[in-house]
Length: 326
Image 1 (cartoon, rainbow, N blue to C red):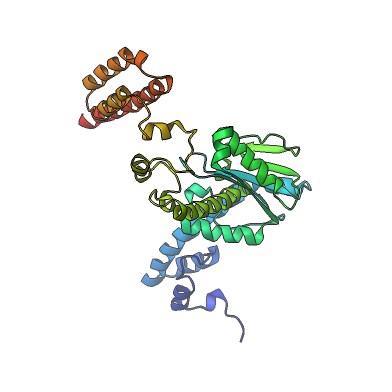
Image 2: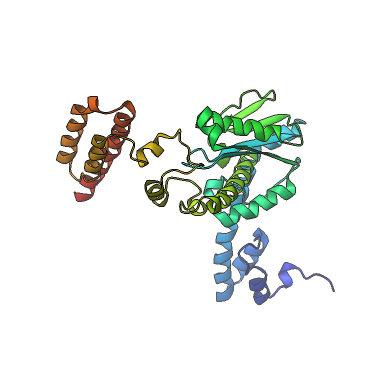
């Protein structure tokens, strides 16, 4: 039986064909519905016209993310590696980096910065990336090396490991917001590259899914901290657990915030911090700020630094409260 053309489909058949949210809408079907004066046709037209615009924006975004890879592929640079790391901010667990090389002209719908995606989308896209990539390399730097190197250099080392673990030697490296040392290939660094570049965003997804899985496994080894839910980030749940249980072997002892949570700062610091948290007026803020200056000599350099950062946040809060009251 011959396939029926779009013109031959009834309104009911069109509704069934485009009922699924992921169904791609063409300009042809919109024109057909726009010319149909029936109420049902106009209702379907309005729904599909919005979907058409959303799909067009997504295509434009996807094309923009692939812009640099397409330039390199067209120039004969076939092996382009996107590299990114995750896990720089958490109080616990490893830093994980991924390097991803795609065959030329690869496209995957929905690729974006891993932070902009929910867990279900990340896991689905991770599978798509792994099925279409020519090579994937992972680099994992454990807590002992994070504390030894410092977190910045641990992130760079994770990216070096990810590149070294690729089964294909890349000809060009795309990286998010930094330059990876000791890499002989040409590199291009993009500010917020995980949100604007296809290969870097893909690397961020692979690294994020890998690290989340590791933290879920570590939750069973170190119960009570909630690693499976917060993945080591400084949520209130995690802070409370550290105060109650103390740090465990996968906590980053080089992070000064761990010392603060464990009560290793002086009593004066905690008193000033608690009083600052209660400030609600400009006058209270002014008095608190003056007290910070007077007691600066009794506090360590890090304690003073943290109170200064808190002061900046509190002034913004007080200003916002005054604006809201007007």
